[in-house]
Length: 227
Image (cartoon, rainbow, N blue to C red):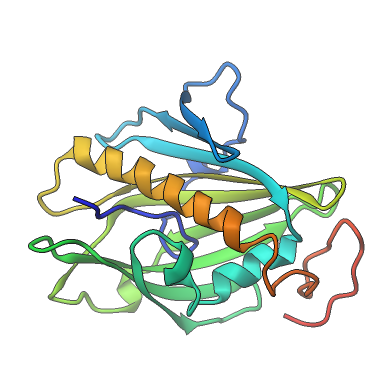
């Protein structure tokens, strides 16, 4: 079974737990693996589905990451098992309402979700935080799909010298339906890792670099050219 729950701005429901920092020393995070310059962790949660955290360091602007996530046509090329991502609305320059559909092998029904996301930047550290909340009420359920449940996440983007950017993701998602929790946990880890592998390939040399967004301050103080 290849269906996995990828990480995505449009995937996950924000919770206060998602704002925890990305430090693992002295925490309950258990290291899963280090490969392709990606660190993967898991943590037991109050639910049957584990939390997952992934970290990587690569060369990128802060704005480039947001631009990549907002390029819905490119999403299926790097987000594990994403079939279609649709922007429904952008009420403000830092907010997005998105519907996402993910493939699942027959006879399992495809999964979908609707989310409302927004990002904020700390003016002193320039750390950019992206949080997403469930917005299922914005779109009726599709009979042929199962809507994801119990999902939350945060993305933390920390700039370092020499245009280095640490990307840290924390989140969890229940595949819902009749998929056992042990399999949901494995799919969550696999999907997160595969998405980070693809992220490392597509972001550093992408067309999104050197295109600063208005409202996001780059460490190099690039002049914004609009959102």
